[in-house]
Image 1 (spheres, one colour):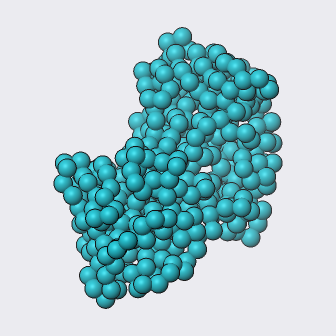
Image 2 (cartoon, helix red, strand yellow):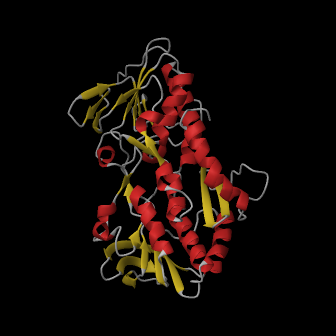
Length: 405
């Protein structure tokens, strides 16, 4: 196979798909580390969101408007912004097809398009969202409605779901649940409230050190847990959610669950144009080596972030560690070398367990803790909550997106 690989000293065309965290922070660092490269970003959206703060918006701690800025304000200087969507790939000719049926060529392609949130896969959900006390922090407008549901709750059953699929920030479904439970207790509704967690997973958290703490948090709030189930239908008007799976039983069955408040984390997966393309793996994600982030077939294609087919928690912290690895390996390939940098699967999940309480989980591919601070991060701490509320958003806008860390 003849791949057009220019000499490192020649002009290099680098095409990045996606203007989210991964695409913007990658382009910013590339401008510094690969001088002379012609970098383009394909991104149709006019706005850029800091999605990790939507949990705080849902708890009334953060303003929704503080999580959004114009795309033009975060686009790196000197990067060409193509305000279109990619719809297909032609790796043999080193081109992508755009939504107006034009083509864009590249020497090197990096996919950073995130994932698709599949609201429509749950019957009745789209009609129920934003009314009937059915909410979600996985949408900019619905995050604020989530706080409306929490503060207007008068008691009864609050149901929180986690899908059976990979999701952005796997701990988010639990964070908002713990915040709601804490809010209810602080406002005298603890005895009047019943909280349930219906999850498509098999356990509370994949890393035992942090899971042990979360089990104690669940016990403290009196939350009832159900595992190996998936939400299939929502009847908002009649306050009924339908689940299929095992729950507490060994036999698979259908559960019809009444709710007074329902928080839904929708199933998620690869974008359709990725899943149906020639660069996808069997699950529909971009097929890349989990350590080098290089495509398994096309050496001039890379991927990072949520769309990459790697067994890692899909978090912003993962992207921050992937960016320097990808840049080094891209430089190696440009120089005709084998990629040398290795990504170890680092991920971080700031697990909010209540107002002013947070467990900072950090771990690698092997689920071994990879902690930053010189103390036991499995303990609930006020200082880590302050990190989440104030420091991380500032770092995102001022250091991470500009490629300074």
